[in-house]
Amino acid sequence: MLYRSVIEGEQAMIEIKNALKKYGSKTVVDRVSVTLEEGKLTAFIGSNGAGKSTLISMASRLLKMNGGKIYIDGTEMQQWSHEQLARQISILRQSNHLSLRLTIRELVSFGRYPYSQGKLTDEDYVKINQALDYMGIASIQDSFLDELSGGQRQMAYIAMVIAQDTKYIFLDEPLNNLDMKHSVKIMKILRKLVDEKDKTVVIVIHDINFVSCYADNIVALKNGRLVKSGPTAHIINSEVLAEIYDMHIDISRIRGNSICIYYT
Image (cartoon, rainbow, N blue to C red; front, side, top):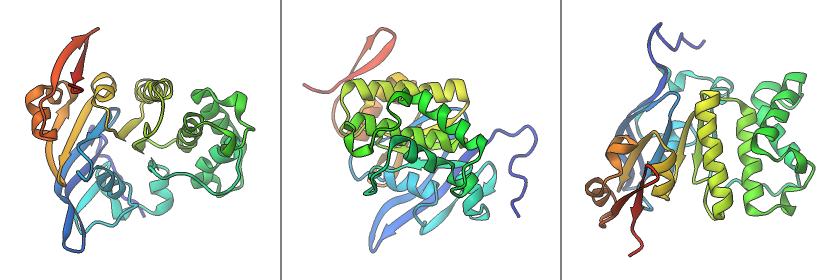
């Protein structure tokens, strides 16, 4: 039985305490402790191999930890059943392509599996339709995934996550290999999920300008260790970014946003 997870008056959140992950003698996440606030968009940043994807995979119980604990709304993660956890946390991994020939609608319906186990109810159909509308892909819902562009396909996968209707949403590099138009559209949708739907979104992302414009908080990792965490405005500055990326990055204020200049 799941214990009562949130004490009255306490803020719900995910707490990661001393998370450790090793592959043989190599430590890929090294005793990381960080709190992910409810109702915020938090970006995990850092160079390749920093441990970002590994950490969110552990936080969603896709990967087993070698040490440490993770608490979901005050309850240690191992106390949640798979069914209960699937109604609290959804995750979209980097490699999310299926070999099955599915339509967009069929894919999105998979997001309801934690509730219906494949036997869709009227409530499930409502959630599916809402997710398709929210992503703006209802008009192409009968198209097959292998007929779509990369951007359309990614929108379909995010719609599946939205249909799952969890409090916490983890996305591992959802902008990977997307054009500018789809990247901006996805970031705007993620921002709306936080602001309008009160979701908590955690995203692994490399484009620090998207982070600067859309994220509330940042978790910065380097070589498996936590470098900095906190509000975006405190992390997006040249001194902190140099510590994270080992390079100088100029910051310019453009239309009220801090834009990182690192191309020259």
